[in-house]
Length: 124
Image 1 (cartoon, helix red, strand yellow):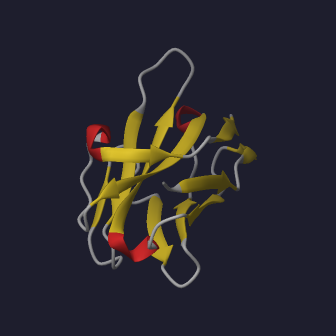
Image 2 (spheres, rainbow, N blue to C red):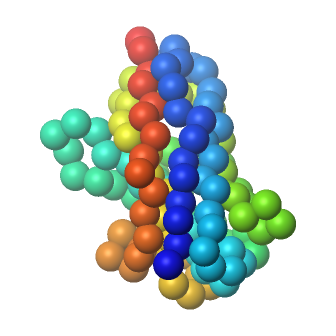
């Protein structure tokens, strides 16, 4: 069993930045890849970014590439999503999730534990 708690969401103006955190407990943190997903009202949940167990491999959705950076600190059992140059279309609830295995993939079907989500709202 894994527990995930996201934090760091909020209201920000377009062009601003936020850093989301995902604190994990219940399983050896360095034994699995991590992913960030988001869901806007009325839309399907979509992949944002993923990172492998060591932090060496990362994937990004095209819509966030160059603006968002995923990272992890295995000593702190925490994953991060640094979001820069935010746009109104980034408004969504952001979720972190764990994936069994060491390598990241951009497909949510491979992720087994999910956090409760944190709201990000970007005003124009």
